[in-house]
Length: 364
Image 1 (cartoon, helix red, strand yellow):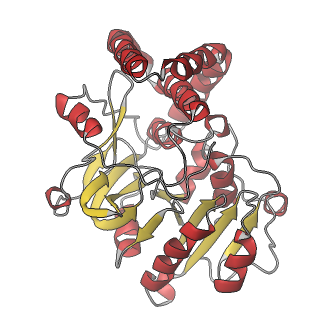
Image 2 (tube, rainbow, N blue to C red):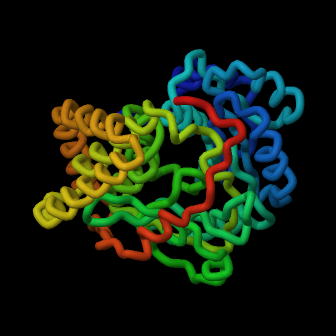
């Protein structure tokens, strides 16, 4: 697992001009936006950020764009149109986790928002997103994420995780009106599209696991934050618009294979031993169901190969479980894992999910 570092050497290796890019004072919040060939998406994302930033030194904020070796002139465009943005330029494409970790390493804020380049923030989002951190046990905050092409529908109201090993987006596809007045409440983890994190907690648990590349990396980080004793909360006052899967092409076999592998890595690396015995049969039933569904859609081979890849990673899973145990020994509070049984409504929400946006997609 790639640690998150704030050393000068790491920032230079990431391509960050540390002498020219270090504003003062130390910001309250760093907004980190990883991107790869996403200049068209950044036009909307950065525009919304700068329009809605709160005024005053109390809300000192830095915006960091991490360019993952783009070929669409992203770096030149950002430098020309948004001079206040700190640019971290990776010399080689390493995937979402590597780019996100480079941004987390460069971030100087007490809190960090990781923002997808296919998002758009709304007025008051930052104030609402950092407010729950007044509680020192809160390690992450999940905004109310709405579908940008259909803002009346929810993309995510925080993530849940079932005993069978199926992560779900709370409220996915449901009417936004059902969620806009919800009180502050605990969730399993925050969706990686727009989550806020306590910087100290991120440094403690080590950032994103680069082996995962993309998909399930936010659930894995949520598990590790919980192993370290932190909570995740949902705040409906913080609202983000997100264009669902505008970056990756879900029909690509390589991505399907990676998703199938990552699901197993996250399940076997993170589930507490006391839950594993009860989870094995539900997990087996989930695999059979998923396999049958993908076979019917002629997508079984990437699914099967992804599971084989996970089996080949058995040794790394053992190492990851030892790291979780180390986090538990130094946790700020007893680790708590609110695992759900899942429900028929979760399945319906998945089947009725909003259609994915096809523009700007790339193959993995």
